[in-house]
Image (cartoon, rainbow, N blue to C red; front, side, top):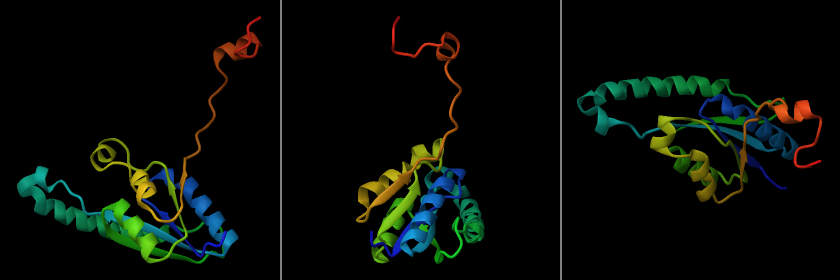
Amino acid sequence: MNIHSIVFPTDFSPHNDAALEYASSLAAEADATLHIVHVHDVRDLSTVTGEASSLYASAWQEGLAEARKLLKKIVPGRAGIHCEHHCLIGVPEEEIVSFASENNCGLIVMASHGRTGLSRLLMGSVAEGVMRNASCPVLIVKQPVAKKDASPISATSGSTLGILS
């Protein structure tokens, strides 16, 4: 694997933790630059907000300033990794794909989930859009889920599920 640059997109949700660990590990092993990227979404609800869109624009600018602060706080999980922070403005899946292409990045490592609920419904899955359109490989990392306790049947019966006696 001859990768010199890895893109790690973040929306600051906790779902990104496992993906950052993978990206950091791969960057360390390949001695690659880790590009930590956040895309501040330009899509807005101005058609819904109507006259209130100027208020929304002000809040959007404040959100951009906050995003830049949060971005600087995200660091690789390992010491000695060269990383660069990039706060982009646009449609996330388009900007991530474009950034990776323009910077000759060899890999994008991202979480399978970020936003949830209404914002995901309105905007779609960024991971899916990146995966479909990127010219380089994309590693989609699922956030680890705590294992559930054994089912009541297997815990009390002492028999293996799927085997009838």
